[in-house]
Amino acid sequence: MIATLPPRGHRSVAAVGLGPDGVFQVRSGTAEFGNGTTTVHRQVVSEVFGVPWSRIALVHADTDAVRHDTGAFGSTGIVVASKALHASCVALQDVLVTAGASVLGIAPEACSWTPDGVTGGGRTATVAEVLAAADPSVMRGDSAWCETELDQRERSVAFNVQAFRVAVRRATGEVRILKSVQTADAGVVINPEQCRGQIEGGVAQGIGSALYEEVLIAPDGSVSNPAFRQYRIPQMADVPRTHVLFATTSDALGPYGAKSMSESPYNPVAPALANAIRRAVGVRPFTLPMTRDRVWRMLQRRRGVASRERGWSRRCAR
Image (cartoon, rainbow, N blue to C red; front, side, top):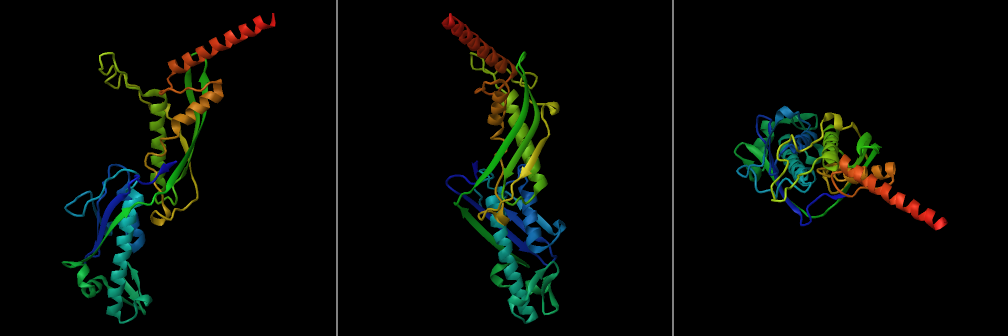
């Protein structure tokens, strides 16, 4: 289980504008660092306005273009930043529909936004006509803009469950993963392929820290394995295919019912592997990484205790 926000809340600012060329200019304060937020942000704009990505231009993490964002951490890229962007899109759409209704001379309730402009009563007001009639307070030059600041403090939780099937070679302590399955409760998953890849990567990272990766510190405080030739990381052959299953849930706090994922796929990997090893050999490791030498020594201690217990039992019987 992981909280979808930092404990003291998170502030995010997003803005969206439409120019006479029909291109939506999107400004988001959060940063893209491989977490996929720019993809989801474009999806949000495309969903609200029904336009292709070729009509969406996005700038992120630039304080010259948009006001301050607390930061791209704490599972906030979708739950907070996308929620702020969605609110800006809805506000801009209302502005455009109201302006289009005035051009068409009918009530806003009888109008709707289309990629070509505002439609109502069998007619369409073009983007240029809509912008010309828009409220001057939202205009920046020849473009209409809406900005939303969100100070999100309500928290939700996401859940991940990891299962492994393993084989343990008792003679060497080697642990081999035979099957890997993770189920994730991410609410409404806005981009399933992207989220699936994030879960698969989180499991691979978790396997590395659970079975292989360890920084060794010498008595003088220096790092004994400063290069990847000495620092063991999992290779492709060490990482099994992970079957990913999504729970069918929806969260009222996130945009479109979405929750976060971020680092949560990583969290259950090590304890699940430790539990699987315990079920395979009868004793559970508690030190990471669970390297083959540690597992072997654990099994040797287990055999020694068992031998002493058997000897004590025989002596008692006599």
